[in-house]
Image (cartoon, rainbow, N blue to C red; front, side, top):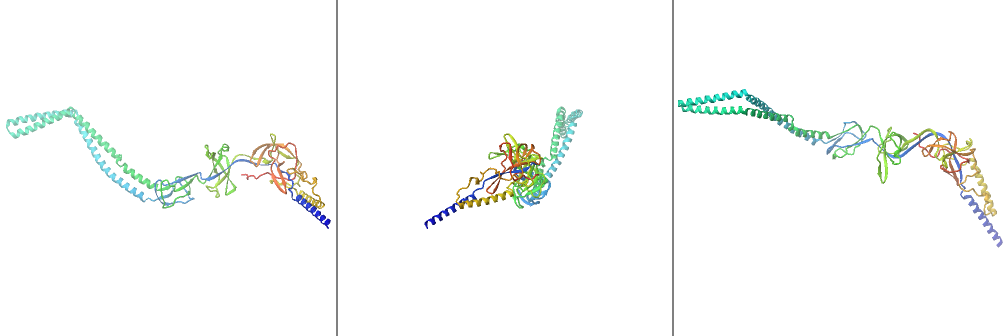
Amino acid sequence: MKKKLVITLVLGVVVLGGGGFWAYQHFQEKPQQTSLLTTTVKKGDIIQEITATGTVMYPEEVPLAFEQNGKVREIYVKVGDEVTAGQALAQMDTETLQQEVTESMASLKEAELNWQQQKVEAEGTLVKARQALRTAEQNADPAYLQNQLAIAEQSLLIAGNNLAASQLSGDESSILQAKTALTQAQSELINVQNTYNGGAEQAVDSAKADLEIAEVKLARLQERTSLAQAETAVVKAQDNLAKATLVAPSDGVIIDIPVKEGQTLSNTTTVLNLATGGELLIVESYVSQDEVTKIKTGQRANISLDSAPEDYMSATVTQVALKGTTTQNVTTFQVTMQMDEVTDAIRPGMNANVGIIIAEAKDVLIVPSSAVQTQGDQKGVLLLSNPPSSGSPSSEGQMQGGPSQREQVQGEQAEAQKEQAQGEQAQAGAAEPRNSERSAPQGTMSNNREQGGMGAAQFVPVETGLDDGTNVEIKSGLTEGQRIVAGTRTNSSGSNTNANSNRNMNSPAGVMPGMGGGGGFGGSARPMR
């Protein structure tokens, strides 16, 4: 009985050990296998561009405000209206302003009446001054003065004779009258003598001075100098009234109305925002100081919006800032681009993704950037010596290269056979697998994969041109239609891992065995615009 129990325990241990070994072999990580991804040399376009983000804007936005404080009475436009230069946009309350105009005009009218009266008086004074000058000039004539002197002397002689005769008669009344006449004749002679001796010339000078004063006074009145203050008050009142109407300084579109009717404003409050420049829009962006030297006016740019990232619109660089802006020790330069066309999908204020084209090559040979290797100081690609057979798996434009159907079937059959053998070994008490059953080390290319008729891959030197990060221009070394290695793929634990690891590999030149599978250009390029 004890012997039977021992045999049963031994058999149990053997079965459990065999089952554990089978589970270990079944679930352990499968060895990695690396295969090549291939593609065809073809023609296409290469574009090098500087990418940035920006904001859609109007070319110019003009804030409009009333030039004085007051209350908004009426707004004549709404957002989106197209307006022309001189068009009335809004109106302030004008009751007080109109009253100021009325009062200033009344003051001006009163001032004009006073001015008219002063003007008439000045004109009369001027006439008299002119007449006085003519009289003085006549009295200063030498012949006239000589004659007046003779007359005065004769009058004095006659008055003296009359007095002597009256005294002889003894008539007191006659004597008194003769004395009075003699006194007057003496006084007249003195006056004539003074006039003759320079008094006439002084009279002329005085008359001239009076005439000049009268002329100046009239001239000043004619200049309306006394009315200037009243006239200025009227002009100011009328100007204030005119400024109560806000007009468009140029053609444009109303893009914002931040105030409401009835609101009291200062002369610094924006009433309307006017966008000028027609229907054109611009995009303002900022680039680093390392990139700004590559950007020139006239370069083309591709614009997409966050709302429609796959829709590209064209633009042209119109301005590149000469002076940078530094924020938190980072210096950037503003770049302005004008949109070639404006659609309903684009609005000012939207975020934009910008691609400024700094170089491009059209209809040139291109290969994936990952296909270019470097051996020493020489760039090249791995060229397949034989094109793939019609039965070999290959899909242009996709990074594929998984095991063929035949390989998958063979693998499944081998796995099933292996599992069956492991189960039998477990039952027989085998504890360890044979070395020949171990998988190849991870990271190696299995020589048991189907070649697919590709032949060998040979390193071929090439001359490269533009590289946009996805594809690179081939200037020489290849021809259109040739098949090359684009990268490698590693399969592990039943999963595929694409690794475009050919680029910058310093693998030795020579023949590299081709592996099954095929592929196309790595990455996804933006559609050509």
